[in-house]
Every structure is written in C-alpha cells, then in structure tokens.
Length: 146
Image (tube, rainbow, N blue to C red; front, side, top):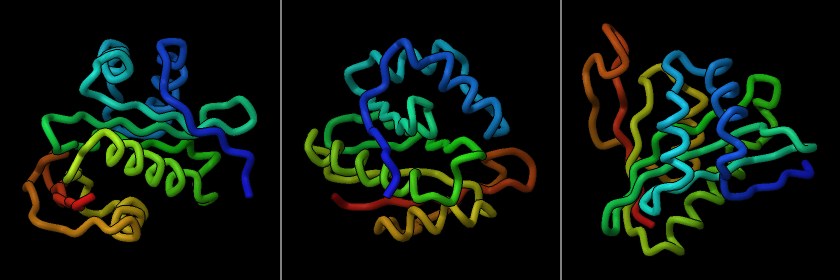
C-alpha cells in the first residue's frame, strides 16, 4: 500500500497544483481559480501527497446539498497506482460529512480511465453535452446519491 497522505489543500499548494494541471490537462485553471477553490467555504480541495510530492488533487463546489466535482488530476508519473481512487473516495466521504446528498460531474466522452473510476465509485450517466470540451469533444454527465 502506498504511503499516501490525503489532506486539505492550502494556499502554499497553488503553484504545485498549477504545475500538475499544466502537465496533465488541456485547459489548466488560472492561479486565482485554484486559490478560490482552496479558500471559498463552498468549495473543497483535497490533495494526495506521496513522499512529500503532490501526486493528485481534486476540487468540488457545493450549493445547498449538492456538489459538482470540477477537476481530479493525477500527475502522469503517478497514474495507475490507485491514487485517484483513494483521493476520490476521500472526497466523497468529506462531501457526505458536509451534508451533501448528490454529486455531479462532467467527463470527456473518450476519457475511459476517468469514466471507469467514476462508475466504480457508483456514479451513473444521465446525459451529455455536445462539444462541451471543444468541437467533437462531448461531455458525459454523471451523478451519484451520497
């Protein structure tokens, strides 16, 4: 089992999260958006740290008893080790403790590893958004009751 530490994100993590995003996703967030993810009381940011290095992070925004997961990003060197699964499970537990009843997310239609993670966590597909990520890049809409 990996010696993985899952913790709340802090402002000192912003640059590491930005670097993680820039090396992993097509449209990385701006630093201000990441700062808001960490500081806004309606948002949750969890970090997965392995040997002092941020291996992954996830963020969600909540309104009333519903939450939307924005990004879950694992550094390419740490993929395939179960880190995203453990981080995602920790987020769902945290959201449930906050009183969240339902969680939503969008995922690119051809992102098979992410869709598999979400389905394994109990998410089901309920719709799609055409060209959400750009021309020919549809989003699959998924949700889960907590």
